[in-house]
Image 1 (cartoon, each protein chain N blue to C red):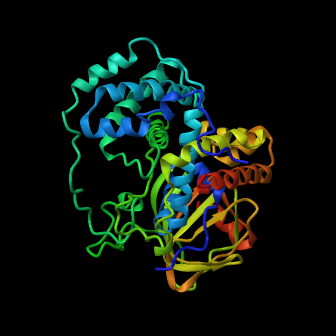
Image 2 (image 1 turned 45 degrees about the horizontal axis):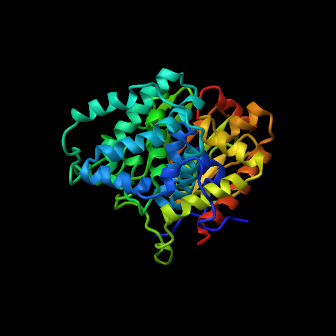
Image 3 (image 1 turned 90 degrees about the vertical axis):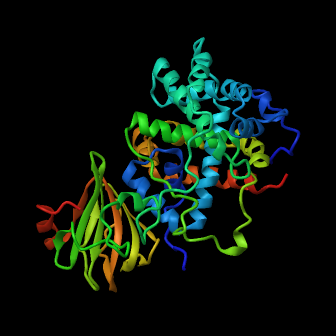
Length: 223
Length: 198
């Protein structure tokens, strides 16, 4: 399998490794990592940096009795840690962890995302919400072949990971595992590949459509 | 530029450099449920974890409570610790990070499953580029001390303030491009120290 050519980049990976990214953005980055050994390696290095930074922190003594209290709790722990030798078999899935956990109950018998539960966005384009919170939303977006998204820019940051098929915009071709970063400086008009496109998209902050059609869309489409 | 192995005397954590090392203690907890080893690990990590959680905004008692939860996870999960993959400090850092996201932000931490057959594998030629965890952690700490202050400061903010670099940029009035380039430069230097075989 080809490995991705569009990556989150060091700064976003540091945000992920340090734990500063919200859940939706972390899900996008970790989904890319499932496709990308190079970024897995980079995150392992960044976690090592986290370990070294932790070791270098000025120790702040704990109150008396903390260790004793914890030791007493250890006595009530089971003698051997309860850890299943074999993980419970997950439902058949074409998608890697951690995405698989977020798709529980939404897959058909083949382990693919089924036909139910989609919401209309525009002709040839549907979405399915996975997470929504005060910071933004994370959703799957499915596009038929050759569908164009109205030209838009981003009020916040949008992370899009291709899962199947692909799309192209002014910045190149995006294939499975590729992560596209949209920010306020980016205006683009992505078009899906002929075989269509399934992607995971996390938006943090707003996304604004530009152009006459886009301004009309803004009134009721929240990407 | 980087101190050679053995020339760096660690003044803060003698336990890290003298036998048995933190890694060996963690393995002993995993294999033998060794409480004495756990006590030594607690003595090393708990006060640092408290500082970590205080920097993230916990008051003293909340921090201590959370430190105990993290150390309880260290006890429970020690069996899964593999010293070939991470230093003890790195492993404890990831547990503390995930626990504080869970407790302080009430969010899940999405992570890959290293045993997932659906993971796209490494190209064969690079399968052996694993970080030699224990050997490299001393070099990494030395390289951290050598970072230019403005890079080190940003790196600490990135790990200890629960804010993505874009927010750090906005809040501290440092242009986004400057934040990114400082973090990248820091990463370049630190990566070199990880690759340096001493």
